[in-house]
Length: 552
Image (cartoon, rainbow, N blue to C red; front, side):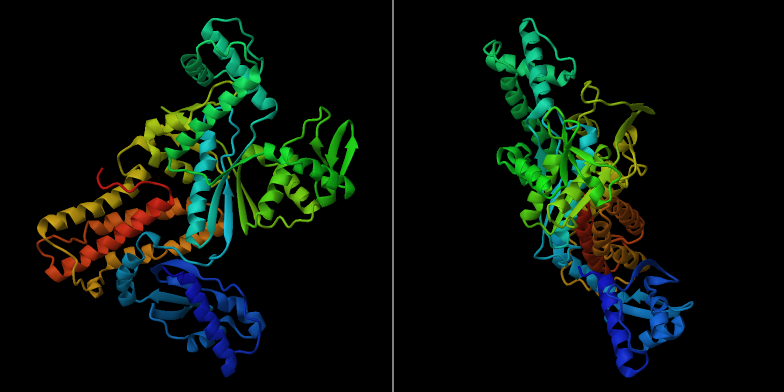
């Protein structure tokens, strides 16, 4: 599909240039970005362009006069059915009904790539998400970043980016030592041997299950091994579970980046040395500090604690430098709210090392609370009080998990309502959206049974208000993708999907293919319309990482 907002902007730009050449408008610099607003097809049209108000001052004309000059020099375009000036100088446009009907065949030609455009062709994007250390299963909290990241990667690819999904983790340090000691204690407990459970150990049932598996596989052969052996075993087992859990909601990573590689390669040591040389790092109170105040921060940040242990900021600076050195034009990093204060220091560190951090885009998301029977569940991974992704998928299914996680703005807290997610009714948006796709597939089955095909269909017959309204909404998909990427807020896609599905259902009630009163030639055209509708609905579901059921 073509980005209609961009096509309107190009027409307006050409009209301004023509008006200037003809002397209808004086010379002035035309804005690089000409605003084009989506409307609902009513009194303000399908698209509205308020640029005349913006140009009134440089043109030294009233906005209405600027609008009239633009309209007089507007090039013809087959997608414009009507254009008019409204109010003080708004340019309103209605799409051509004949052009809209012709888009049925255009949608079918694009197929699974419907809605895609190549504005970012030739560019590389990386999306880093989840990035949980191997200390336990993927929880509902991790799932939010997982779904957001995977969906944004889908959307970035739809704009032409070559996209890589990356998982960043640390398998060493104090946290992983606790993992090893926790597993060793549970293993010895399973054997009936004496054990000391670490005071700050992982108390969840999860570690008992892993220990039971070790006893089954190794018997008591590991009872004299120390915690590093159990740390390695835990890491391999847990990462296997993490991969499998994420696959259940359709997520695969292209790259798994180990934080320890930054230490093993000497990159962290080189960073500290370089920051000292630049006078951006100094020693105080037994620790190494970063001059965050030199980059507008309220206070300096610790890089290395007095214990000699680096803080999260130190390797993260080098990790983001590594991303930039790999040549990504855009690097999206999705983090939980507990990292909100960390990234400014990382960005300042990247800048201190002479790199431009502007390709790095950080999205901070809030927490997820599970609601069951009207009651919320408190969660703590260390205490073993959490809900895993697997449990959530078992309860409500992959599609409900993805939709309800995705449907909220990143900075909004999510109350995940289990009862609503499982409902098979119009109250459940997942049901509403997928049922639209199911209805399309039902039309195809019924048509096949009746021997009706769309061979030789004349789509110019599709001029009914319902078909035209749905096609207008379907053609908004590229604009929705573009807006969602610009805002880095994937919830806009779920809003669009629900609006599209509701419009489809109202269309389905009146636009019949096999009804006795439907002439054969119109039935063919309508059958092709439903094929285009199925393509768009499937495309939206796929972008959200959801399945496209044939039956429900």
